[in-house]
Length: 304
Image (cartoon, rainbow, N blue to C red; front, side, top):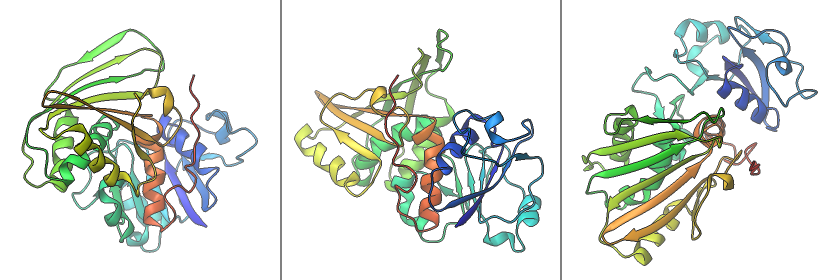
């Protein structure tokens, strides 16, 4: 069994990871640290009553094979020295921290699967919005077809359903993140990425419409997408219009292609709490330890 420790397990991401790992056949949840919660995990995490007797801890000390960090502060060398005789043997998956070493593998599994399988010891998170866009663009980048500016219109749901918040376009942190990820697949990509994001409604899904100039016909483009994701387990190309209800509670991303003149429009939908964060962390864990990608992640849609 793979021994797992979770930092800030009472956070939204941490709670989702706990729910997933409790049904993972190859995982032993060894400790769950929290700076705010105390007592048994079910007292702070809904939906796991009767499934877990573990209690939150303040300072983890028991050795683990991998740390999933849900804090915005990166895992410190001091912590690693306390939970392993040799800190270099403990794998680290960052789900929230941005200020991590450049040696950490970028955690887009569909892009960096080989690197994660072949000995990666640490991985950094992908923001959910960036992930939705990157999965829409990756087949084009792999075929050296990203040669014009990228325009993104995205809608992210909120659990409160309170109104609409518009974020400015052009200089969101995700713009640079997307550009850097695409250069891993197409080194010549230096086009601007422009994003407008709206947060609205009670749905908690994420939908991004990604537009890019492409002179190829839709019948030529679709096979490139299907080939890219043919051997991947969580990203699919749909011939039908996609909706966030189709992926709610799952580790899936669905893509739909449309063409208007020379503009290719790719609609990408995913659940930001699962595929965008917690599920992706478990996906990374599976790859790092040589498990099948779908282990513990065969989650069914639970549309509202």
